[in-house]
Length: 540
Image (cartoon, rainbow, N blue to C red; front, side, top):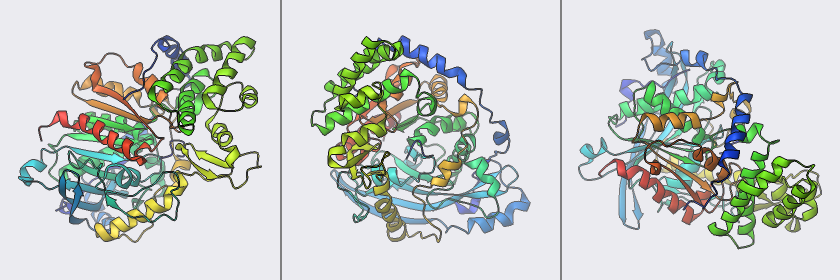
């Protein structure tokens, strides 16, 4: 989930077969294009060849058979169960499969196992329909996050409440029928990359971390997993969609490209939730005007919500300022007193922060400063994942905030407990190992590579749209997300050339933060937007 926190193939044994966008100004695009051009040369071309050479979809060599059997037994055999949930439009029956597939390198050596949960709707004419029904492969981000956030937090058939004001680690992890599940219109497969959930490395393959915990090794392993799941379940003819959140939204276009050009599986669409499409904004642009411009509207949205004055129209004013006069004045530099005065006055108004503080910061407010100062009177600090959710500051007099994250950290216990209950009681699948909802080791050791290609995925999205005129893309953001502000994605999408029908790519904005789907109305809105992406491609 945290976008800042954080070779091979997944072959399967044949015997393991399982039975309202906000208004926006366009006048700023020439300036933005110039800034992007200036930022681009800071990177060299991606260097991924070594990792790619190790990847294969071939079956393991005979000498690897014994190792394969041993490692496949480390997680339980797949468990298939039948369920029914009560939705507003009637009952929905489905099967749930919890299992794992091994991850292999070219030599056949097993590097680990990828755990998954697959939900498939049961309907009349089950066998015939199943091979035609679309399937969404979903994963979270981090890197290092399990897919529980999207599974029991957003669009799986069961849901647990989290990420709202007042939610705490001690809250009961009660799973309820999810009225906003996507299972009505698509089957769902939730994937936990190695190092997350119950997915793990094989014993004695410590060197595999350098491969799997990298940009290239990650998307290639997940691509192979998808191919092999489709083959194992006789779903190779199903329309395939990818849904990724945060870093998952970054990896999704890369997985799609790998599936299309290397693994021979077409992708019908992408659903990118709070994505980071270019890490230039996150890591390398803090000293440029662009970083502050794309963040300001999300700060304004958080302030508007706190003062009960939020509306898309009011936010549009902040966006127009950020993309216009604010950006222009920032480019004039701090030695222009008139530009500086204009910035301080307007930023103070938009954020609700003390004018003296804004002046000391030169009108450039980072999310940490904003969240602490906005709640200082209440001795509370908001979460960058949703500024409306705050935790008390245990050391309010400290120079730096020591407050726990009121969304990310508070959600760890209820989500983990909910998943463990779900596995044991509902899915009848109980591995012995530790369940890792969010593995900080993955994010600490992640290899982003040395080239620009490993730092952005907007290029893969461009190629995907150019190669296949039928691909549809939904990019969904929360207005007040301070982890991956929505204007970053809007800026990048606005730079795409005309690639057929412009309606193929849609940016949808919702009330809330990084996990905006924790709010009921936004969760329903995401479901409806996803349905529009999936349903036009099939007649079910």
